[in-house]
Length: 68
Image 1 (cartoon, one colour):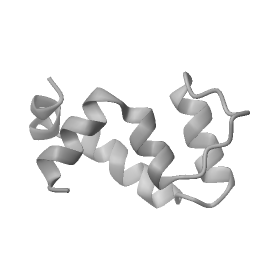
Image 2 (tube, rainbow, N blue to C red):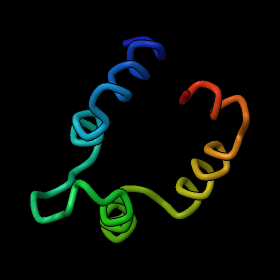
Image 3 (cartoon, rainbow, N blue to C red):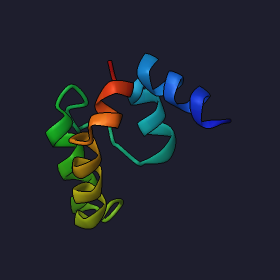
């Protein structure tokens, strides 16, 4: 899958992409991004450094233009 296809799939169904990559059990409130993130941090599936990096990317004007 190329980057553009992955981006389009993520935009159309972000939870499906997350479920493919990460173990998110049914007990986690999947309508709450913070609950998902906290679960991933608590279970060691992502690191705080990864979260910080993504948050920095979110504030990047080039990335913001892509998300429009």
